[in-house]
Length: 143
Image (cartoon, rainbow, N blue to C red; front, side):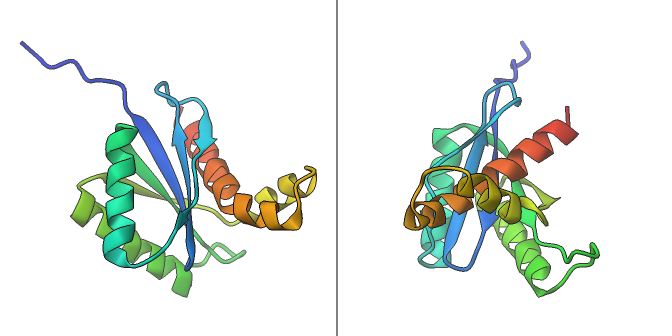
């Protein structure tokens, strides 16, 4: 008897030096919802936190924002994200996609400025919003 593939979610990460913005899709892969931002500690703890989230939300694939220059060329930050994506594949055994994130932080900041949030609360929300925008963009491109 063949196994029926259970629906699984997709997770997006907006990875920075101090924080990782996180978003997950619904089970149908239509909408993206932001989760609490991860405060980075060290590689081992960051991977363990991500491992727990993968299990909790039944994640099938991960989309990592790839920071490109405005010209579309890759730079130092892009290489760091390629290494990070490889670590996720190796340590967590998950499929990882890199996705152009050039405008997500700018758009996240613009959207958050339109809210009544304080500057402090906006700063805390921008990584989650950027991850949500990365995931929504990826989902729309892969429908």
